[in-house]
Image (cartoon, one colour):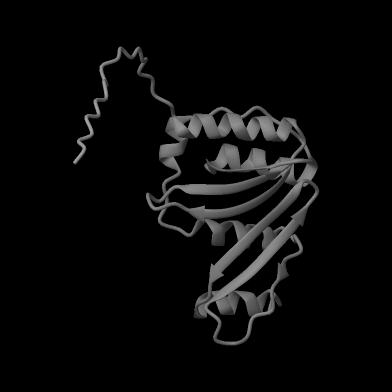
Length: 166
């Protein structure tokens, strides 16, 4: 019978530095970088679990795709939208106060969808049969797309009929 005497010495000196990273600041920097690189953006707008408007972004480069989320309060939303529509790039700085004020009970994706409809942006929808729970739609822009997955209800159905979208 053999016994294995295995000893592992885990005494070591580690030097580490504690620093905090603001996820929102980092994602804003990343968004700035991908716009400066001319990436094509595929965006999904939604309200996060805490009630803040958010963009889920896929930044498509020639040989890679970066995926990240970024807060979508008014200033960032306008900057992203101007990039999508016109290709213009503006500096993006995360402002905590504006972010906190953006908390909403409304469906951010639905609000953005209606704004695009009201501004005459062409909406492409995936054919859905009566009774389907969600409407899938997208809008094409010069520098990317915005994708929507909107829950259907009577009020929304009425809006879609009124705007001749279904």
